[in-house]
Length: 237
Image 1 (spheres, rainbow, N blue to C red):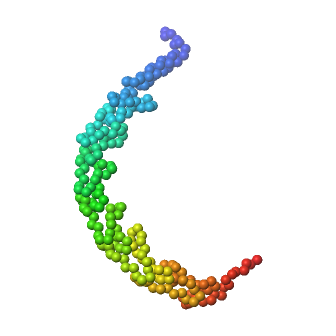
Image 2 (cartoon, rainbow, N blue to C red; image 1 turned 135 degrees about the horizontal axis):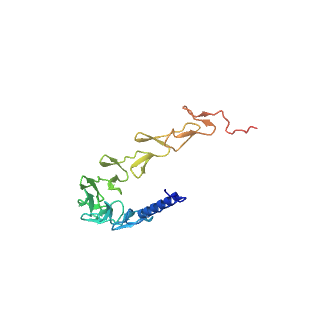
Image 3 (tube, rainbow, N blue to C red; image 1 turned 90 degrees about the horizontal axis):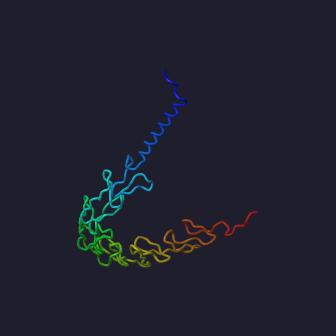
């Protein structure tokens, strides 16, 4: 006859199962068992789990290796992005550093991997050709040319600006032009006098008729006429 099982026997079995599960979990958390270990040239992260390669190394199939650096390049020691850059005077071409050769009348830019033409020259393909500055012109700060005072650009030449009678020269950053003197209005390439009709006065303006009606008069297409409106308005209560 089988003896009676001790009371609460199932509780003892459950306790043994919990202890076994705790041992297994402890093994999973133990370094070197199932958790990833940092390889050579790597450091664990600040959270204590996982790792990253040290500066100057890159992860390749779980290892931290020194990247191949081509000739005329230097390592960036960066964890991300480019692992190497070309020296000044070289540029990156198909995983290598190719020599940058500025043509005559050119110089290396501040980046060191390209060139620009010197002042007074313009780029044409892979050469720098002299800018042809016409007579009565000068080189500007942007590397082109501009006409001098009292000259106007016409194609590739600078022609004199003809200032008509009753006009004066106007110089801007880009060109020279002219405007009519007061009491004159531009008509084509001349300055025609502006005459004010009776009961009007001249206005120094580049637009409109050049005159306005006196107080108490209104402008019409015909000469100024007497306005029926009073010059002062009385307030209403």
